[in-house]
Image (cartoon, rainbow, N blue to C red; front, top):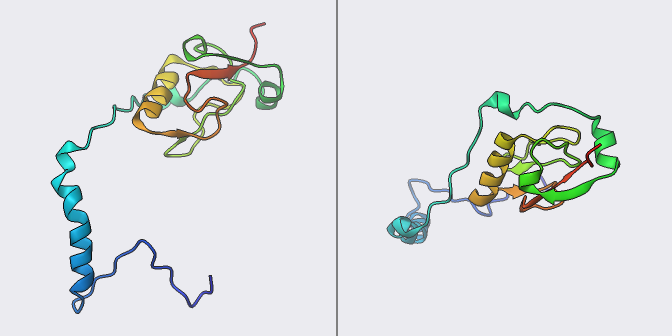
Length: 137
């Protein structure tokens, strides 16, 4: 898009001389406000303490990601070494990296985020019903 063109898609600009935009905006918002009580609440996200998000690096990331792996039910992934990156969006920051040991607290956080509506971009199974881990020695 040329620099002199401004993208106004999806934005409302209201000035002291504009009553039409205000009416359109209010008419569009009124049903949302009127029906806010009927919108179901999403389950809470169980965010652990910040230190609990610092997972133990048990294997080099490259070794875990490119080495042998198996897909296991999420409940059986606790204590196992991740063979994948898991990044919930929002915020889009990796929570689990390949080679890190998966903890119950982090798994609870991620799965509660999925129930809340997070999008899991990197995982082989975005529902997090199962996780990709390295085989047991």
